[in-house]
Amino acid sequence: MDFTGEGVYDYALHGTLVAKIINSIAVDASLLNAKAVDRYGDVDEIAVFQALEWSLDNGVDIANLSLGFQRE
Image (cartoon, rainbow, N blue to C red; front, side):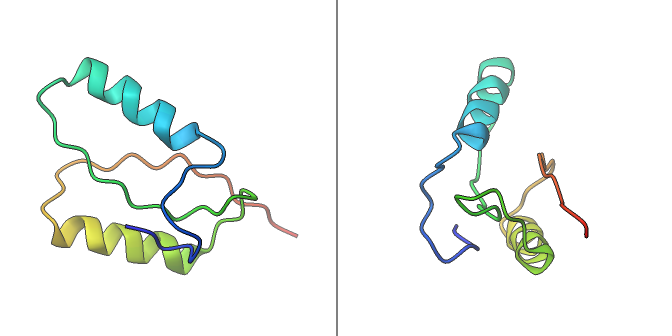
């Protein structure tokens, strides 16, 4: 599910790589994709909370968040 408004493609490939690592360790796990970071690496906190809520609504037991927030 896309929470950035730009589609689910992972421009940085970070989430894709992390998902592959998780899948290689937990081979029987089912993975969901909730994209909350845009192609420029910008993170909207509201999108993160929406993604987490969507994940919980879809039965997620464990969530991995690899996020970096810039503060001014």
